[in-house]
Length: 135
Image (cartoon, rainbow, N blue to C red; front, side, top):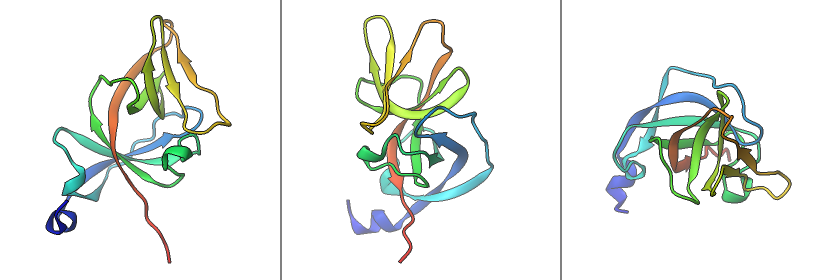
């Protein structure tokens, strides 16, 4: 990535919080955050603040901002933001023969099995993580 692309930025809506753990009720916010243009790959994007540690082994930590491209489908192995029974979570998506599984990136946590009776909707696919460090 060229240095001038790293410096240029644009604003995306901060849509609230997402659980990296047990799904939580979506929390909406109405602020804009700046993200590097190099992170955006087209499409409608939004950001969410991570709460929980279920994705820590993929480098997604509590307090991080995840940048998400809004789309309703995903391929196996993609990290998605999804609503399960109207609660939001971020996990790795796998479609099996008879069901969907959402896997954490933390060996101490179990996968979520989405059954046909569950309300399930993919909100988007992860395209980047922003971490603010203090020195």
